[in-house]
Length: 141
Image (cartoon, rainbow, N blue to C red; front, top):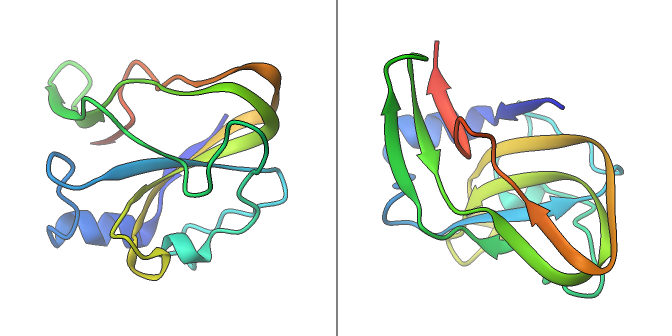
C-alpha cells in the first residue's frame, strides 16, 4: 500500500485554506482505473473513475469525530477520525481520496490519496475504510 499528500493539498494546508476541525473532510473511493497524480491533481474535479454501485453515493462520505493529535514519539502531527463505513455495499474500490468539500468539485482541494494495494470488493456487505493507527493523514519528518 502507498499513500501521499497531494502537493496542492500541502499548499492549501500551509495557507490555512483547509481547517480540519471546521471544514467538511470527505473520503471518496476510486477504482483501479484512476491514475493518481500528486503534481497535476488539485481539486476533486480532477478525480476520475470514482466507484459506483449499491450503497455508494458519489462524492463519498464525510469524516466524523475529526480531531488533531501531536505524536512526539514519531515526530508527527495527525488528523484523526472515525473509520468510514459504506453499509451493505456492492462495488469494487482500489483506493480512497481525502478532500475538503466546499460544495463544488472544482474548488474542493484534494488532500491525500490512499492506495489499498489491490481491489477490495463487497457484495451485500459493509465496506469498511479503516485508517492507519497513525491517523487519517499526518505530517512528519
